[in-house]
Length: 69
Image 1 (spheres, rainbow, N blue to C red):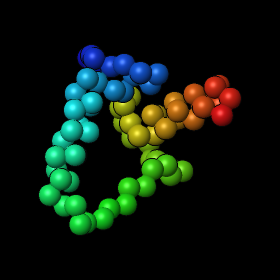
Image 2 (cartoon, rainbow, N blue to C red; image 1 turned 135 degrees about the horizontal axis):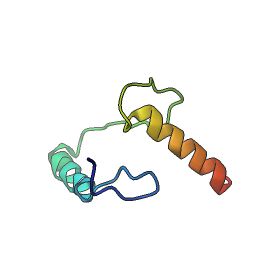
Image 3 (cartoon, rainbow, N blue to C red; image 1 turned 60 degrees about the horizontal axis):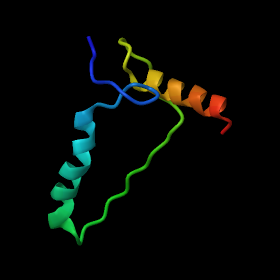
């Protein structure tokens, strides 16, 4: 059973909010370094289970269409 799920897709838990703090502390010692984080993409392979990358991307694609984007 999956509990503590909020947001339109229901895949965000309270603990996920703490990740930003972990990242900030982790990169504090690497101020001279660079990183590139790309978001988006077009494809995601399907796999077993309900909480997969493909199902989440499908949800947000439909959500954007319904919201008029």
